[in-house]
Image 1 (cartoon, rainbow, N blue to C red):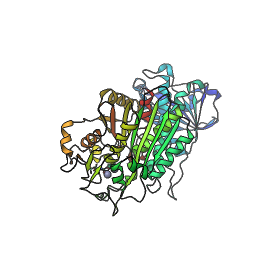
Image 2: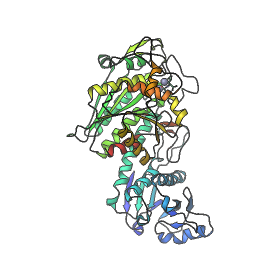
Image 3: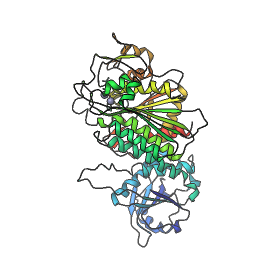
Image 4: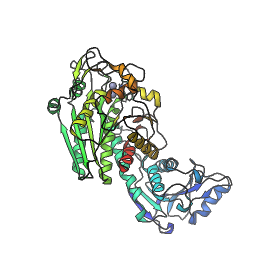
Length: 494
Ligand code: BES
Ligand code: ZN
Ligand code: ZN
């Protein structure tokens, strides 16, 4: 993607489409920036009341002799109601119109800054860029008959100076992290194996300076006594992999954020096999790991002055004669013994070993894990909102703040300690299931057993938000890349 700035509208280059923003007013739409020679073009439809400037409204026009093939009037809604989310939604409509018209090069007239209330110029450019960039994605592993989408390749902001483009180029780097995560989640599980995730991490280490990858194969995982990860991986034809990828952007600081991502590359459920209808999208069960890798890529590309490590205990959860069995007991990396109540509650087992390894070996200042952990969270919060759990309010509030800023919604749920009763075992220290009631809470409480209370820890259950069968305002269907923007925003502000 090429991003440029043209301070004066008359100096703009030719393009496939130019976008003019409008505010909604009762008495009729008001141009949010000068229309220049397009005054006449816009006049007729406005007089005919075919365009009001309400948010979500677009009107495609054609103008003879212009530098663009097409002109798009875009409604931003009421000027005083403009915020990041309404900008994203409005500019996503522009992106979709461009895809429809196969417009790859676009001129975006920036709304007049002096007229804005409550939004900084940086936020304005961020919102516009995100609205265009986030839907500007196509999953490339195409079926033979699917037509290739014409993606937007040139973005020219009209009415700003080149030195003001920082937020737009930053948004591009973050969007690349989001695409990166989506590609991993959308990809077939037979290709995106634990070894593939390991290779991907190693490639990131080669690509970015300050990034280092370490991969443990099965032998090393055995040496590390990660008994729960090994149990889950028993039934799979592919080996597990334990991946750490660290970025040191602040070498002199001791501050260190560890991001743990669930990396179950396919979840059949194991011997407690999932029924038809529940298994088909389970290649997305490594979305947490895709998010932490995408975040690391974005953070490194932005060159943020922070220290971050992504940790992934990658494995498949498959069915085989060697599969781990309900009723069996395994010893975790931490030493805690766990009775397998249900082989489909595998995520918490892999995460338990990843969390306690992080506590023991990585000197974290804080740990945040992301996991497609429970069907329960989808029932509780749906496909738009993730479940947040945290053992400390400051961390929880910072994450909620990042969630508000990025529009990646999240709701805090309680680590209600009395429910620990629910996953008691007669034969081991813990059992990996706690019954149907409060399923997301008992899963989070199980994870909490493997961190220590002195380290701020948050768990984000993304089972509903990571993968979606319908397209949203600015998020395409299937893998959403949820969490990359949220984590980058969080890391920017620590
Ligand atoms: N990977 C699933 C959770 C999931 C469900 C993710 C739907 C995305 C969409 C997880 O491993 C799982 O199967 N959890 C079980 C736990 C139960 C057996 C205690 C669940 O939620 O049903
Ligand atoms: Zn499962
Ligand atoms: Zn799972």
